[in-house]
Every structure is written in structure tokens, then in C-alpha cells.
Image (tube, rainbow, N blue to C red; front, side, top):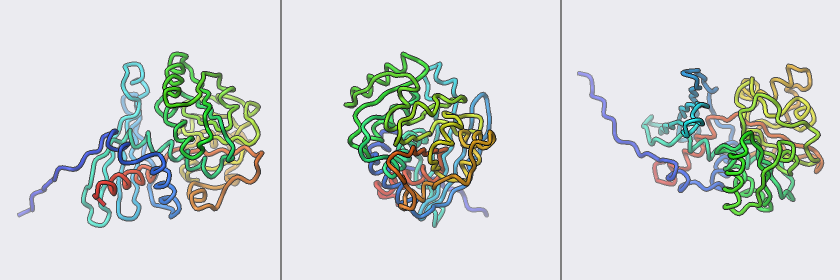
Length: 315
């Protein structure tokens, strides 16, 4: 007689519980530790459905394994619902026991700026004071605080976006968080010491002439080869770092388009996130422009989920 399946109730961590368990500094250090050991993950699976994208992202690292399942529905903006919604399932790797369910959108909202902050900590000059934010969504709100976590000297934020109302709302939120924030054009935001691209743009938002010498860019908005926030002029002028070369080849529109246009090649990648985390790559000169392109990796979510689980004694 077959044994009956017993499903025990799992601890569930909503956004408030995740942010209570993991500070931005915690997240940056969890990612630094995870990537220094070159963790294991599989390529992201994409499925188009009902005008949306369904993404599945599995990974394993040490004592845990997990997968994030996310729906990206751009039309949700029109009805006031989140564009990104998802769920994360965390397992004990040794015994295969499910450990917890976590809000997948909250993990994304935390780990993406934390990855940018890790890259910024290694690549940005120590004297930066300003950050340009491209985009007015949740990542646009989260990135300034992430930049300040690794560069406390950051106090000025210039926000650019397609909707003036959304730009003004983000500026007001950042002012409430203690930043000297103001609206600006794409080029004015790109002229800051740090630049964070958080849009799903399919066309370059500014030209290389807008960038100042010694700037550092984090581009996190595009995750498909038909999307790009900057053009080949910026890619060919900057020193390029990626979260992982295989993922970038498959999904980084800025880079794949620059290759297709004959303006850049993959041999020019100066390092990946593991190189940055281990201290094996970095800025060569104060005047160079550095650019970190992230398409998002499953193991980034796992590192944060592990931290949450350990903080609650589940691992």
C-alpha cells in the first residue's frame, strides 16, 4: 500500500517579514559571500502567456535549493497592480524538505539593488555624491538607498522617466528618505557620478556624451535581447562587467545588440559578479567609465532566501 503524502504547513514570509529579516547591508554581504564561491544555478526559463511573461529561476547553494516563479505583466501599471508578482520556494538541499515560501516580488525588489550595490562597492570611485535614476518603478525607488548603503557620501538624486507625475512622486518619496532629489532629463540623470538604469526600454535613453569621466553605471532594467537602456556607443566606451557571462550572452540586450552592430565583442568583458565578489576584478583608473550589466540570476534570490531562513532558524 502506497504511503500517503503528508504536506506540512510551511512558514510564509511576506514583503514586511523579508525586509525585517534582511537589511540592505545584510543583502550585499550575503551576495558577496555567495558569489565568491561561484554558486550553481540553471538558466532562466521564459514562457509568454496572456500578454505577460512567466519566469522560472532555480538554483542551489550549499545547504539550500530553491526556485522563484514570477509573472511580469506590464499592463498591471494601468490598473494599479504590481508589474512583478511571484513566489519563491526554498528547500533543504540535503533532505529535499520544503522549508519556506517567500514573496518572490519582494526578493526581487531587495536582491536587484543589492547586486547593484555590490558592484558599485567594488567599481565606483570612493568620492561619489550623486546618483541618476532612470525609471520610476519600485527599482527606481530602491536603488538610491542601495547606493547610499555602500557609498554614504551619496546625497543627490536626479530622477528621469516618461511620466512627469511618476517622476514627481518618486522625487517626493526620495526627499522623505533624506535625499536631495530633483527631476531631470535622461541626459541630466546620466551625468551623475552613479547611474542606475531601471527601465524596460527598447531604445537607448541617452548617448555616451552625457556621461562624466569616472562614472559608474548599473543597468538592471532589460532582461531580453530586444531591450536596451544604452546603445553601442556607451558599451564600446565603457569597461563592462556582468553578473554572469552565459546569462548575459542569452539575455543582455545592450550587449548582444552592440555585438550585432560590430561595435563590441564578448572578449571585452572585464569580469563577472564572482570576480567582483572575490576581489579579482575592479576599476583600473579613476577616469574610466565602468558599467555593470545585470540580467538577474536565480542564485541571487537564493542567497537572500537563505539569509531569511537562517535568521529564523530554518537552516
